[in-house]
Amino acid sequence: MVSMKEFKEKVAVITGAGSGIGLSIAERCAFEGMNVVLADIDQRFLRRAKRKMEKLGASFLTIQTDVSKLSDMQILAEKTIEHFEAVHLLFNNAGVSNPKYFWNYTLNDWKWQIGVNLWGVIYGLHVFVPIMRKQDTECHIINTASIEGLLSGSGPGGAIYGLTKHAIVSLSESMRIELTQTKSKINVSVLCPGWVSSKIFFSEAHRQEEYRDSDDETFDDLKIEDSTAKFKAIKDVSPPMACEDVAEIVFKAIRRKKFYIMTHSDQLLKAGVELRMGEILRAFGK
Ligand SMILES: NC(=O)c1ccc[n+]([C@@H]2O[C@H](COP(=O)([O-])OP(=O)(O)OC[C@H]3O[C@@H](n4cnc5c(N)ncnc54)[C@H](O)[C@@H]3O)[C@@H](O)[C@H]2O)c1
Image (cartoon, rainbow, N blue to C red):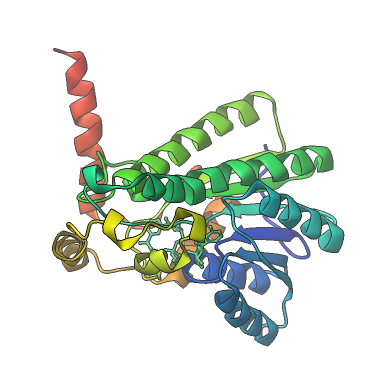
């Protein structure tokens, strides 16, 4: 597999491109002279992103898309091809989080987060990989997991989030094996950011109507104290990274064909991964 080094006039599709990491990646794609397709559920975010892209003089398209709906993702693929006739970079990036103790999650909490974080990626692959295979040109898929997809759980309060992010890491690892074995022109990377300054803590605003619970079905158990404490603790050791810096790291990684894309080099996160691996390896000896 050859790595993508030249991006000019190629086509990038980014889900969750209305804010945070996705928006910075979109801006970076525009800077590289790419044709950019920005997909997001939030119309307001998309309008703001549109203004930014216009200022950059980018060639782009914004498409309101709910990644948890196959029909929306099919339309995203159709419109991408209709306008730009190809797809070279796919960023399966949209994600949400909703911290609660696992026993307090409602079924809608499970369905919503798994729907966006995991099915969003699955639908992305389902609709775009056949197009990439048919094109038979160098392509790269970047699935956004999280450092929480490599740690032992994602707590307190991140059981569903961690589940989806571990699944994305595993899925990407399987994709790599099969793409390599078949000498495919499609590359894959899994992006595992540490803490990044974005709107992820306001995910609730993007919960679709069909996944909403009535007030008496929800529990405000640990949301405030534990989550705040957790993120304050992380912040003290590792301040949040700017989204533009993540985009920079991602593009370098695509050029170098790196599979695992780590954003943070601080020892605490590395130690967390080592702790998990060490415990697993030690369990073999018992
Ligand atoms: N911010 C962090 O610290 C961090 C760390 C690790 C991983 N991540 C991951 O990075 C990705 C981007 O998140 P972010 O931090 O930029 O957060 P963000 O909230 O700023 O951006 C997420 C975007 O996804 C969109 N979105 C939500 N539901 C959607 C849906 N159903 N369909 C389409 N779009 C939808 C939102 O409107 C928003 O624009 C996520 O997958 C997240 O899990 C973030």
